[in-house]
Amino acid sequence: MKITTWNVNGIRAVLGKGLWDRVRELDPDIFCLQEIKAKEDQVAEDLRNLPGYEHHWNPAERPGYSGVATYYRQLPVQISLGLGDERFDDEGRVIRLDYSQFTLFNIYFPNGQRGLDRVEYKLEFYAKLLDICNDLHKAGKQIIITGDFNTAHQEIDLANPKENSKTSGFLPEEREWVQRFLDSGFLDAFRVLYPDRIQYTWWTYRFGARRRNIGWRLDYYLVSNALMERVQDVVIHDQIEGSDHCPVTLTLDI
Image (tube, rainbow, N blue to C red; front, top):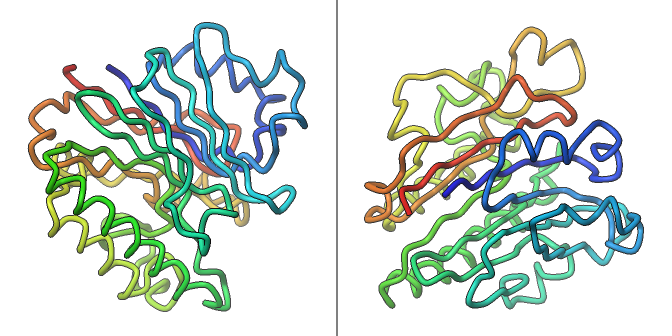
């Protein structure tokens, strides 16, 4: 099974850059989109539908902001939107698919903002999600969390760690919350497979950052410890353009 995640930074823009062609090339069984910045009725039917897939969208209430969408070939047992907390659920940040063998979260984590205005909100979001995951683990569920985490966990995960030590996305308190997930039964699948690989998933549009590969690894797959043995690969498709993020694919032996 292949799962691909991609923060598209506006689905209407990336549709015009061949989004569905990229999906056909990658051929995932589940395709998770973040930051869609649109509601379904803003996209023509032939553009929002991908042949061979069912889909669920969870747009933000605020127009042109946030939002996630998940496309899937195999119908899940259950689909849930949000975290069940009104503090977060009007921003369209979560779609959860429950299958018999695992639970998949497609998440667009909050950004702490340049002025650090939303860092506390972001940390509260992490805490709420971890509470839910702890309960699922206690119930014997295996979990995959994917999407744009808006945090680089370690210095290896961004090009200029020292210069960004006081920037949201690499603040100690943000990194600590990623570590809390790893201390609570999760593994960073890419880093387990490639402990020393320097590869990024996001580049600012400014300063020719992508061309110069001055980036951050913000798009992750956190998988339950017991599920890691089924992970065959995690591929960062940094050659695929169309957004300031690139797609990332997890392959599972399921």
